[in-house]
Image 1 (cartoon, rainbow, N blue to C red):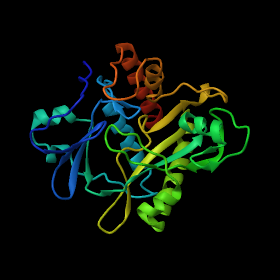
Image 2 (image 1 turned 90 degrees about the vertical axis):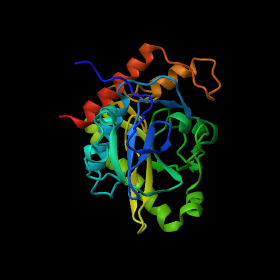
Image 3 (image 1 turned 120 degrees about the vertical axis):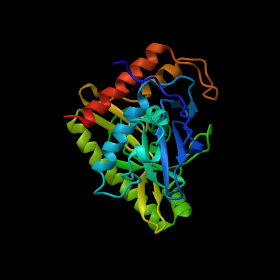
Length: 297
């Protein structure tokens, strides 16, 4: 059986489009629910690339759903147990988004991205080399690239508009945005989610170097986990058996695409460059491998 075609952009006739994000298309169902469709679009350096990664949206949906279920004991999430057939009765529409669509509660998203870093890599490593700190959090001297931090750190950022770059902010800035109690809830939940997930993933041969969570609140102010969770798009996944301190490890995420893009003469502004087929296919294979390791067996 042939693999389903890549989906760069969904087009559902039976529901009203609410918004398109970098990767997700969101449709209104009613005043309490939305349909989130995870496409095969890929964003890198906050720019949506013109080529899809085949099957990526299905992998992200599968991995997110796995973690949403696994982390239910930590906090509620936005998933609602309503079958796709009920909200998308049209068979052609449904075929387009099967396996990549979820029905969720309509919640109020918080204006911060909750980032947890367990290892010194990426922009954190660059920051540390310049300042001895990551996002203003002072770290011990003499740490090496990709080294595990003494304990995970919480480094929130703002949620930027499309085609804009997120900006790291202090915890105090999140208190100003959310209030002391909610800011603390977000920080504490993020650290707990990361620590539990990292321990589980390590048993499956994957190091979660860092990740990003998003949260929303219901009408009663109850915090929920939303968007995607602990996927190769929102996290940096490394194979544990190839991990070495002092080098940037190979990864199961879009770092492979980022590394390719860094070799180009591109200013990291839209429009993004096209990807060679072999880069897209390799990236798709790494996403699938991460899904299998985490969710099967």
